[in-house]
Amino acid sequence: MYPTQLPTLNTPIAVDTETSGLYTDDGATTCVVSVAWTIDGTTHAHAWPFNQGPRNQPQQTLQFEPDPNLPAHQWVALIHWLSQHNLVMHNAKFDLHMLTTGTEHWPGLDLVDCVIWDTMIVNKELDPLHPTGLKPTAKRLGLGDGTEQQQIRKYIEHHKLPAGRYDLIPWDVMEPYATADAEMTIELYNLQTARIADGELDPRMIERELEMMKTLYKIEQRGMAFDTDQCIRVAQNLMQHRTTIENTLPFEPTPTAARTYFYETLNLEPYQLTDTGKPKLDENALRKMTQDGVPAAAQYLQHRKLTVALDMWYLGYPNKIGNDGRLRTSYRQTKEHDTGGTVSGRFSVQRINLQAIPHKSKLTGLPEGTPTPRQFFHPKPGYELWELDLQQAELRVAARMANCTRMLQLIEQDADLHSVTARELFGATESDPDWFKYRQISKRGNFSLIFGVGPDTFRQTLETQAGIEMQRSEAADFIQAWRKLYPEYMTKIDLDSTYADRNGYIPTIGGRRRWFYPGEYTHKAFNQRVQGALAEFAKSWAIETEKQHPNVLVLLVHDSEVLEIEQHQARATVDSVINIGAEMGTRWFKVPMGVDANRWGEH
DNA sequence: AAACCGGGCGCC
DNA sequence: AAAGGGCGCCCGGTTT
Image 1 (spheres, rainbow, N blue to C red):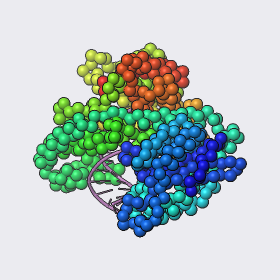
Image 2: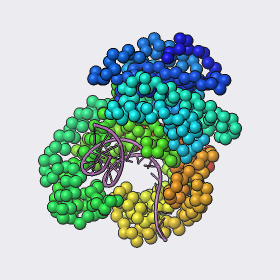
Image 3: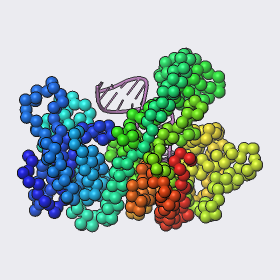
Image 4: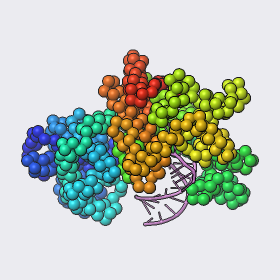
């Protein structure tokens, strides 16, 4: 089981970990490490338990079995040995976190600099339409027969283990499974390198994604400092406030009880229907009810707002805090059906959605002066937090790609696009009493009509985003006028849609393709070209930021970066990162691109 | 008890 | 014929 001597190898080692959970901030640690390597066509594989088996379950019948777990010195020897080698992993970011955290009892080592290959990432590059998981991939490519996995599944089902608790599986069941994983990984690596040697894929694409993975890993390791104590204090106030409101409600504060009250007891006409035909009970509907003088509508709306704010942020964030007082999200770099990731090339995040920290304007209905969740994120002492984002990224890239003469001209002149649109389409001027409204409509129009939205969707966004109601015919007229003003977009949307129909994908930028799945509408092809291109841009910007300014990136949100910088270097670093983004953006998209920089929370 | 779904809502 | 897109988390309610 444990080789008497760990060989020094000049071939890469595949490494896999079995763990007690998915996220180290939720207490997950490493239980098993397995490795595999290939020499002269022969694959060698081993697995070592450090915290494996049903030892914590006294009712188990295995209590007289000897404990298979290895002592500390072998853990130390193993990770030291790994640190001397080139490593291959399947979803390296996950195993890196686990190996850095270590076992339940012993700290680990950060092996990020040893990783030379991630078979999950390369799998997505080589076969973008196939699942990314190790088992389905191995099955697809004829590596292993899945026996070990079936044994594990049977054991979990039979013993009704809690989700993710692979650590409770006995060693004799786990060993073949863990070994097989490492074996599959190295064999997958061998297949992938052969395909790439055949010229199937530009190795620079792989290098770039590997760099990106390492950057994401480092961002996740850093996390963001969060003031849990203050947040909890505010949460307590909000809960008290909610209780006083709850006492005035004539029904239990649940959606079902509220629906029954409004639509059966009071017998209201539905304001709008949900997808499944039930009367809607969202903020908009409750607003309208309030205006119409419906009893309890205002209170229920306020109650709901408080509940959402508490569950999502004021209590939700403190629930996720790490031992070091920092919040960590987990990025997905590749898509896997049903478990996350994106089709567009953007990153998605899991565990805690730090890509959706609410802005102040969305926090209506809370008592006056309540601090926003954003305010509890803070830099560590002696540091500053900055957020940098691309100015009007989508609009500029879309204008360039659609070759919209008029918009490109306005961008070159640095004109206020939304105001110009309002002047053109409403014949309005700044002194007009309805100027703000006209500009709002124009702004929403610019954002959505560049991608070909229709009157129904436009009305809906206008209502939810700007609180402006429009008749359907009014919306249709507006859209028609907008398309006349910026005629290139519809042409481009049709062109890209046709391209995607014919080819099954739309090229975004730099050789990247956004593939369309069967049944997907290709009407969105142009949108996806823009979104995909910007996602690629954001990756390069982040990689370059990390390269030139190591240790400052703490969050990525699509086309923005958050930096935590030592205060004496803050301004210089920010200026440098602005330049990197603006220069790269202008070069990539051949349209003037700028970067806005603000202290965290001041925008 | 866990898995799943719809509704709702946050972000870009 | 007409159609902006991309995500994840939380809850309550239902199914397994």
